[in-house]
Length: 440
Image 1: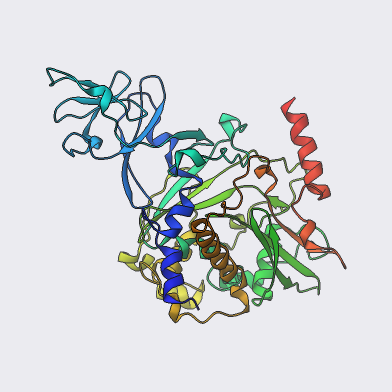
Image 2: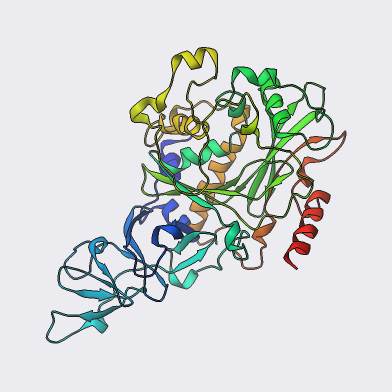
């Protein structure tokens, strides 16, 4: 459990807080590119780290992210006119460019526009997401390219989903390897027929589900990295082998979930304020999987009972706390462990039902919570270190953020899971070579 003080440090992200200061030292997602897809399209509201902002794309395609309230008399710029390279407040016609500079005061006889600037933040568009930096100007870091900068337009997929809970609760769920054997399980999982991949090497995604069901008590091991950590969830298979799911945690707010043979798709959970968040998922430049290892996705298994989420755009929430996530008690008794018909909504039930901000002085952690507890420690220590003048982790320009990957495999005797998904992994080298050949 955490002390009350540490839980406050962990969960509060508004201006002037320790964690808020830490998150503001990174480029963070602000909205999807498609929300302001066209020049001079309507602006959108953005709530981020407790601040109310408005995003717009000007006539030249430049993206602005400004305080929502006009610096004249506080009218919301969300209602403004996006036209002729600026956002014009409809109250008195003051107009602001994408940097926040006032460029026109149509109702003033003697204009003083050059002296007025709305507070705004720099933006960077990459991988279908508008990113922003909200920290000190003198400390602005290089944009962390996880593989989105060179992603072909046709390969871009990004989504966002609104969450009714503190951001850490949601990311905790992404860093929890044990819950898949419970929350996401269903009765027919144990009846999935073996397909011959319960042996050292890469299992099918269908076989992987059998492993979740067979061993619900994963043993967790952590490997410290320059960007945070990776951890392994190690399970015994029906044939007596060791199956490993390797998940990467990227400070301060991202995770890459285990995938066969390795994964590059990233999840980022960003605080809107202290009691709501947004879960972004986005593709990066994915090395090819030329041998189609893993085969069809696990949700294509014939007995798989759950409704699937889209992976693109602003996602609807038909399953919410208000409608009890449409839980069906008959289904819970006979078909699935949770009775909730949507895979991702099962996760949201677990995190949102703990309350807007979970009181971690009440929790009782076990061995399968090792990764979650480690993440909390890293975040809290990083926030406190920043207050003492130490630079945040994982922002240096020389680091290669494209090397961060998850992985999944059935281990051979004496095989070290820490190699999996790294640039030294033979399957990664093979995929990178294939990807380079495809780009030529």
